[in-house]
Amino acid sequence: MEQLYKILKEYSLNEILKIEKSDRQFIAVNKLYEEKNFKNKIYFQLVILNALICYQLSGNGEDYWEEFYKYTKDKDVNTLQQVKEVLIIFLTNSKNNKRLVNIKIKRIDKFIDNYSMLNNKAFEFYYKNMDIFALDLSKVMKQKKDAKTIVFAVKMFSYSARNVFNYNEIFPTSLGIPIDSRLIKIYKKFNKNSKVNIKDFYKTISFKLNVPELHLDTILWNIISKEHL
Picture (cartoon, rainbow, N blue to C red):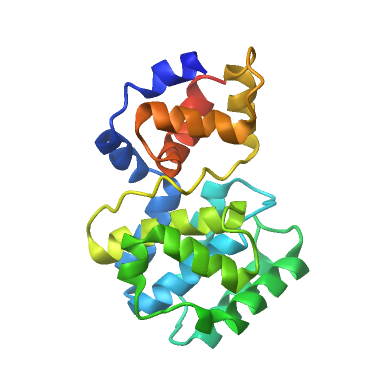
Protein backbone atom coordinates (compact mmCIF):
# COMPACT_ATOMS: atom_id res chain seq x y z
CA MET A 1 0.00 0.00 0.00
CA GLU A 2 2.80 2.44 0.88
CA GLN A 3 4.37 2.05 -2.55
CA LEU A 4 1.12 2.97 -4.28
CA TYR A 5 0.56 5.84 -1.87
CA LYS A 6 4.01 7.27 -2.68
CA ILE A 7 3.22 7.17 -6.40
CA LEU A 8 -0.20 8.77 -6.03
CA LYS A 9 0.82 11.52 -3.58
CA GLU A 10 2.75 13.17 -6.42
CA TYR A 11 -0.61 14.17 -7.93
CA SER A 12 -2.65 17.00 -6.42
CA LEU A 13 -6.43 17.01 -6.69
CA ASN A 14 -6.23 19.81 -9.27
CA GLU A 15 -3.81 17.73 -11.35
CA ILE A 16 -6.15 14.75 -11.12
CA LEU A 17 -9.07 16.88 -12.33
CA LYS A 18 -6.98 17.84 -15.37
CA ILE A 19 -6.09 14.19 -15.99
CA GLU A 20 -9.79 13.30 -15.86
CA LYS A 21 -10.39 15.64 -18.79
CA SER A 22 -7.99 13.51 -20.84
CA ASP A 23 -9.96 10.36 -20.00
CA ARG A 24 -11.34 9.03 -23.29
CA GLN A 25 -14.70 8.47 -21.58
CA PHE A 26 -14.80 12.15 -20.58
CA ILE A 27 -13.79 13.18 -24.09
CA ALA A 28 -16.59 11.08 -25.60
CA VAL A 29 -19.36 12.62 -23.50
CA ASN A 30 -17.83 16.09 -23.92
CA LYS A 31 -17.84 15.77 -27.71
CA LEU A 32 -21.42 14.52 -27.59
CA TYR A 33 -22.46 17.62 -25.66
CA GLU A 34 -20.54 20.08 -27.81
CA GLU A 35 -21.43 18.62 -31.19
CA LYS A 36 -24.99 17.44 -30.71
CA ASN A 37 -26.45 20.25 -28.60
CA PHE A 38 -29.00 17.99 -26.88
CA LYS A 39 -31.31 19.52 -24.33
CA ASN A 40 -29.53 19.17 -20.98
CA LYS A 41 -32.16 16.78 -19.61
CA ILE A 42 -31.84 14.45 -22.62
CA TYR A 43 -28.05 14.60 -22.47
CA PHE A 44 -28.05 13.58 -18.81
CA GLN A 45 -30.56 10.80 -19.43
CA LEU A 46 -28.46 9.33 -22.23
CA VAL A 47 -25.22 9.40 -20.27
CA ILE A 48 -26.67 8.08 -17.00
CA LEU A 49 -28.60 5.28 -18.66
CA ASN A 50 -25.64 4.23 -20.80
CA ALA A 51 -23.48 4.11 -17.66
CA LEU A 52 -26.02 1.81 -16.00
CA ILE A 53 -25.60 -0.76 -18.79
CA CYS A 54 -21.81 -0.33 -19.01
CA TYR A 55 -20.63 -3.59 -17.41
CA GLN A 56 -19.48 -7.04 -18.54
CA LEU A 57 -18.25 -5.38 -21.74
CA SER A 58 -16.91 -7.33 -24.70
CA GLY A 59 -14.46 -4.49 -25.43
CA ASN A 60 -12.78 -1.89 -23.26
CA GLY A 61 -14.68 0.95 -21.64
CA GLU A 62 -12.97 3.72 -23.59
CA ASP A 63 -13.87 2.14 -26.94
CA TYR A 64 -17.43 1.58 -25.75
CA TRP A 65 -18.00 5.23 -24.83
CA GLU A 66 -16.52 6.37 -28.13
CA GLU A 67 -18.88 3.97 -29.89
CA PHE A 68 -21.77 5.42 -27.86
CA TYR A 69 -20.83 8.97 -28.82
CA LYS A 70 -20.50 8.16 -32.53
CA TYR A 71 -23.87 6.41 -32.59
CA THR A 72 -25.95 8.88 -30.58
CA LYS A 73 -24.55 12.09 -32.09
CA ASP A 74 -26.46 11.41 -35.30
CA LYS A 75 -29.78 10.65 -33.61
CA ASP A 76 -32.76 12.92 -33.10
CA VAL A 77 -33.68 12.40 -29.43
CA ASN A 78 -36.13 14.69 -27.65
CA THR A 79 -38.05 12.52 -25.18
CA LEU A 80 -37.32 9.88 -22.57
CA GLN A 81 -39.07 7.30 -24.74
CA GLN A 82 -36.72 8.16 -27.61
CA VAL A 83 -33.76 7.83 -25.24
CA LYS A 84 -34.95 4.31 -24.49
CA GLU A 85 -35.46 3.41 -28.14
CA VAL A 86 -32.08 4.75 -29.24
CA LEU A 87 -30.18 2.98 -26.46
CA ILE A 88 -31.89 -0.36 -27.03
CA ILE A 89 -31.05 -0.26 -30.75
CA PHE A 90 -27.50 0.85 -29.92
CA LEU A 91 -27.07 -1.93 -27.36
CA THR A 92 -28.34 -4.67 -29.65
CA ASN A 93 -25.81 -3.62 -32.31
CA SER A 94 -22.87 -2.62 -30.10
CA LYS A 95 -19.44 -4.07 -30.87
CA ASN A 96 -18.20 -3.52 -27.32
CA ASN A 97 -21.25 -4.48 -25.25
CA LYS A 98 -22.43 -7.86 -26.54
CA ARG A 99 -22.92 -9.71 -23.24
CA LEU A 100 -26.13 -10.01 -21.21
CA VAL A 101 -28.03 -7.86 -23.69
CA ASN A 102 -31.49 -9.01 -22.56
CA ILE A 103 -30.66 -8.27 -18.92
CA LYS A 104 -29.35 -4.84 -19.86
CA ILE A 105 -32.52 -4.08 -21.84
CA LYS A 106 -34.48 -4.90 -18.67
CA ARG A 107 -32.28 -2.42 -16.80
CA ILE A 108 -33.16 0.21 -19.39
CA ASP A 109 -36.85 -0.57 -18.86
CA LYS A 110 -36.43 -0.37 -15.07
CA PHE A 111 -34.78 3.05 -15.34
CA ILE A 112 -37.53 4.34 -17.63
CA ASP A 113 -40.34 2.88 -15.53
CA ASN A 114 -39.00 4.40 -12.28
CA TYR A 115 -37.54 7.59 -13.72
CA SER A 116 -40.14 9.75 -11.97
CA MET A 117 -38.31 8.97 -8.71
CA LEU A 118 -35.54 11.27 -9.94
CA ASN A 119 -36.01 15.02 -9.93
CA ASN A 120 -34.98 15.73 -13.51
CA LYS A 121 -35.32 19.48 -12.95
CA ALA A 122 -32.62 19.38 -10.29
CA PHE A 123 -29.56 18.02 -12.09
CA GLU A 124 -27.38 20.85 -10.84
CA PHE A 125 -28.55 20.09 -7.30
CA TYR A 126 -27.61 16.45 -7.92
CA TYR A 127 -24.21 17.59 -9.21
CA LYS A 128 -23.60 19.54 -6.00
CA ASN A 129 -24.95 16.65 -3.91
CA MET A 130 -23.77 13.52 -5.68
CA ASP A 131 -24.31 11.37 -2.61
CA ILE A 132 -28.03 12.23 -2.81
CA PHE A 133 -28.00 11.48 -6.52
CA ALA A 134 -26.43 8.07 -5.82
CA LEU A 135 -29.14 7.36 -3.24
CA ASP A 136 -32.00 8.41 -5.53
CA LEU A 137 -30.55 6.48 -8.47
CA SER A 138 -30.16 3.38 -6.31
CA LYS A 139 -33.88 3.61 -5.49
CA VAL A 140 -34.74 3.90 -9.18
CA MET A 141 -32.65 0.83 -10.02
CA LYS A 142 -33.49 -1.05 -6.79
CA GLN A 143 -29.80 -1.53 -6.00
CA LYS A 144 -27.50 -0.65 -3.15
CA LYS A 145 -26.08 2.86 -3.17
CA ASP A 146 -22.54 1.49 -3.37
CA ALA A 147 -23.27 -0.94 -6.24
CA LYS A 148 -20.61 -0.72 -8.95
CA THR A 149 -22.97 0.42 -11.71
CA ILE A 150 -24.58 3.06 -9.47
CA VAL A 151 -21.22 4.56 -8.50
CA PHE A 152 -19.98 4.43 -12.09
CA ALA A 153 -23.17 6.17 -13.25
CA VAL A 154 -22.48 8.94 -10.72
CA LYS A 155 -18.98 9.31 -12.12
CA MET A 156 -20.21 9.59 -15.71
CA PHE A 157 -22.99 11.94 -14.62
CA SER A 158 -20.33 14.19 -13.07
CA TYR A 159 -18.40 14.17 -16.35
CA SER A 160 -21.50 15.28 -18.25
CA ALA A 161 -22.38 17.86 -15.57
CA ARG A 162 -18.96 19.49 -15.91
CA ASN A 163 -19.76 20.12 -19.56
CA VAL A 164 -23.21 21.55 -18.84
CA PHE A 165 -22.42 23.67 -15.76
CA ASN A 166 -18.78 24.47 -16.59
CA TYR A 167 -17.26 23.93 -13.15
CA ASN A 168 -15.71 21.08 -11.20
CA GLU A 169 -17.66 19.65 -8.30
CA ILE A 170 -15.63 17.34 -6.04
CA PHE A 171 -16.96 13.84 -5.39
CA PRO A 172 -18.18 13.20 -1.84
CA THR A 173 -15.96 10.94 0.25
CA SER A 174 -18.97 8.72 0.99
CA LEU A 175 -18.83 7.26 -2.53
CA GLY A 176 -16.41 4.37 -3.00
CA ILE A 177 -14.48 3.43 -6.11
CA PRO A 178 -16.15 1.01 -8.59
CA ILE A 179 -14.04 -2.15 -8.38
CA ASP A 180 -13.15 -3.67 -11.75
CA SER A 181 -10.53 -6.05 -13.11
CA ARG A 182 -7.80 -3.38 -13.40
CA LEU A 183 -8.31 -2.22 -9.82
CA ILE A 184 -8.18 -5.83 -8.64
CA LYS A 185 -4.80 -6.23 -10.37
CA ILE A 186 -3.50 -3.02 -8.78
CA TYR A 187 -4.74 -4.18 -5.37
CA LYS A 188 -3.00 -7.55 -5.72
CA LYS A 189 0.29 -5.96 -6.77
CA PHE A 190 0.45 -3.29 -4.06
CA ASN A 191 -1.15 -5.21 -1.20
CA LYS A 192 1.05 -8.28 -0.92
CA ASN A 193 1.82 -8.00 2.78
CA SER A 194 -1.52 -6.91 4.17
CA LYS A 195 -4.81 -8.63 4.93
CA VAL A 196 -6.87 -5.50 4.32
CA ASN A 197 -9.77 -6.11 1.91
CA ILE A 198 -9.93 -4.34 -1.43
CA LYS A 199 -12.56 -1.74 -0.47
CA ASP A 200 -10.67 -0.78 2.69
CA PHE A 201 -7.42 -0.71 0.70
CA TYR A 202 -8.68 2.04 -1.60
CA LYS A 203 -10.55 3.80 1.18
CA THR A 204 -7.35 4.00 3.25
CA ILE A 205 -5.31 5.38 0.36
CA SER A 206 -8.04 7.93 -0.37
CA PHE A 207 -8.03 9.06 3.27
CA LYS A 208 -4.24 9.36 3.41
CA LEU A 209 -4.17 11.40 0.21
CA ASN A 210 -7.22 13.47 1.16
CA VAL A 211 -8.60 12.74 -2.31
CA PRO A 212 -12.09 11.19 -2.73
CA GLU A 213 -11.98 7.64 -4.04
CA LEU A 214 -13.84 8.40 -7.25
CA HIS A 215 -11.19 10.95 -8.19
CA LEU A 216 -8.56 8.21 -7.88
CA ASP A 217 -10.41 6.03 -10.37
CA THR A 218 -9.19 7.66 -13.58
CA ILE A 219 -5.57 8.01 -12.45
CA LEU A 220 -5.51 4.37 -11.35
CA TRP A 221 -6.93 3.32 -14.71
CA ASN A 222 -4.94 5.55 -17.01
CA ILE A 223 -1.60 5.86 -15.24
CA ILE A 224 -1.04 3.18 -12.61
CA SER A 225 -2.49 0.29 -14.62
CA LYS A 226 -0.48 1.29 -17.72
CA GLU A 227 2.83 2.22 -16.11
CA HIS A 228 3.07 -0.08 -13.09
CA LEU A 229 1.36 -3.37 -13.99
